[in-house]
Length: 156
Image 1 (cartoon, rainbow, N blue to C red):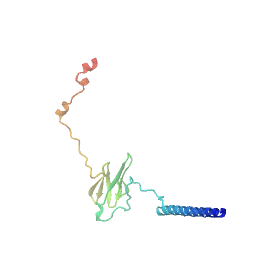
Image 2: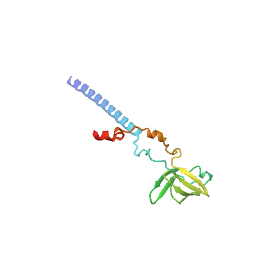
Image 3: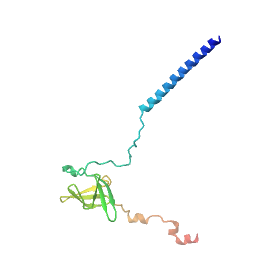
Image 4: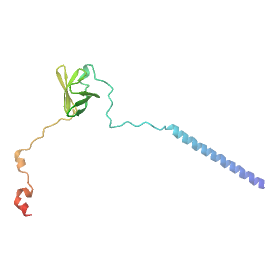
């Protein structure tokens, strides 16, 4: 009888051991599957604030005028530089068949065989001169108490 108890105990331990090993192997397989199914990304995502890269050089065809884009302007006391289609050009430099004749904070003027073309830094934005109010409306502005009666402000 003792042998029967030992044998049944041994069978139960063996069954539990097999069950644990199956569970452990199933767990290990699932971990491996997850790791292999989703490889880690070591590369950094692109910077959303970086301007798009321009691979093309200056165009040489008849589409020259329509494909020019002024991207940036740098102005210092000694140097003026504009970035046109990704290429830096200084005042007096040539870009394709055009010569840079003026660089300002709002745009660049190009001369192509005597024909002037203006590239604006912000083409959709137009500057408007400030509108002056009528002289009568400015004279009707209310002044603070101290400016109306200087004697009262001194008394206080």
